[in-house]
Image 1 (cartoon, helix red, strand yellow):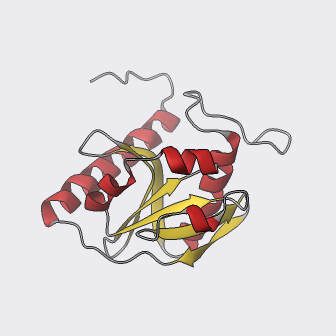
Image 2 (image 1 turned 180 degrees about the horizontal axis):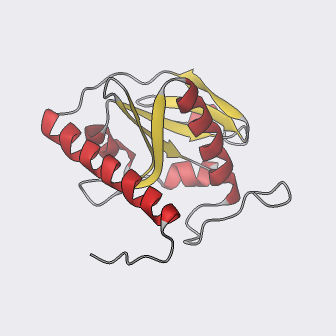
Length: 157
């Protein structure tokens, strides 16, 4: 953060609103015992906004929608269901909750936290998908920590 404002990541994919929503959602997930990563590539090549895992191995995916237009434009959200046990949309107060699909959970977030407005139904992932996702999660987390510890290191494999 810089002077009270969120700083955009170097890749520029996320808006300031999306970063704010992500921060609040990740705080909520942490209080519920979940560790999370943002922008995690999934097996099918898609990239989930937030993937969270708890000690029991439950996997949640949270798709951030920073505006009504962003929500309406999303045609891929159903594909994420095979990659998690619970799927949520996360919005700010500026996006009407009534336009979110009822097939997914709903989280309302601000920069300081979030609350689950509608719980997502549990739909257990296939064991092979769970294993593949857990490996991606672990490797991404380890690589990100390594980059912090060794910012000038070689990163091409």
